[in-house]
Length: 293
Length: 229
Image 1 (cartoon, each protein chain N blue to C red):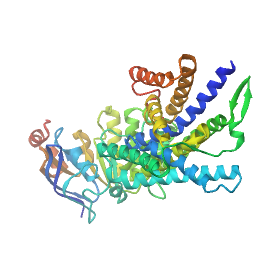
Image 2: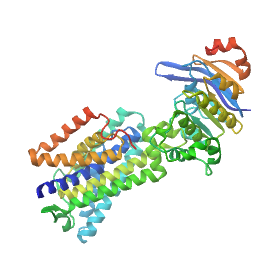
Image 3: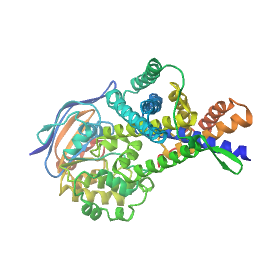
Image 4: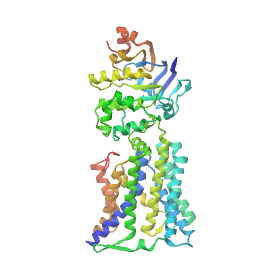
């Protein structure tokens, strides 16, 4: 029983990171119709932004160093995503092939640049000792960072939901996911919403990068790429453009991966997720939630 | 005085030359009906005026050239649009659909609820669950919320029951007292009731301009140009 609880909480922690990445991907696709292959670069930039800041604050206590590093990671990730939208995506609206080429190119270039500057090896990330300690729940020793990951994802889910439901920009985004042309026909400059969605997606992805530093204890150049693959699967399973579907799919994917790795065979987790994707595409091609609402 | 002057307007969809040099004016005030058989380019003309399709030629709106301007900038000059298929946001409530359309600091909710009292009662209902007639009310209401100089209204009676067609005609009459309307409409009864001028398109060109009542009184001309007797 304790093993099952540990696997469940760990799966939820993994699902939390997938959700943070996939929520931005899903909103960007839903509103703009862009499959953003550069989203992994936002994760990497956020993760390295945290590590880099921590490295330059080595003289101070671990907790403020960790918090400042995390904050820097989020800011860098958000700014990077905003610049990507303004400089690379905006000139290519409605040119989907070029968008794919640019985002794939940016993803590859970011990894290459990180390797060129900091090398291919994983770097240790400092975190408060409490995060690597465990809390015992029904006999299961749960690493404390899992609670932080789950809690963060829940806060982000509620914050995004409140933003989409209670603000004018949220209203524009929800409407734009349904019918972008009609939003502009109401006199709204939808390009601002595009930039905002990219910025929000970038911050959420950077947050996933920061939390992945805690989860793995290190940062490496392939971090964004490996998380992005599963985030894409989550987005497709959840239903493109659906925040709630994305949250549900992230939980399912995280749990399936953990259970399969333990109860079937180590390494089968990834295969199980791909099989799950295939089943969902066959049975429910529009994903768990076909609509945004 | 003309509020809109369209001259030599061309629109292509791929290889298809849909508008082939359209010329017409929309005088300020009243309803100008844009008529023609299915597929002659009426909706495309409205979409070109809105900047929703790329065009070649000139569209003068109140002294400013708006051809190919960004749609949101055209709208902000005071152009309201009621699209052919209503295009209400199905996942948003009626209130949210209206709130999204607000541009002016004092949106005209009094006017909207006076014309469509039902919308006030259905504010919390998802627009996608409304009937066709109710969705048409939302679509028209969105355009009326702001103090627009002109409304481009595309087939507002399409698919509606006869009672609702009469209701829409009544609303159009009322709206035409407040602002200029360019109306695409297949129902000639509605056109006869509300329109002052008529522009007839055929295969992407204007083939007739003149008072709507004169056109409708000439059965032979109506039959020849619009395919109805």
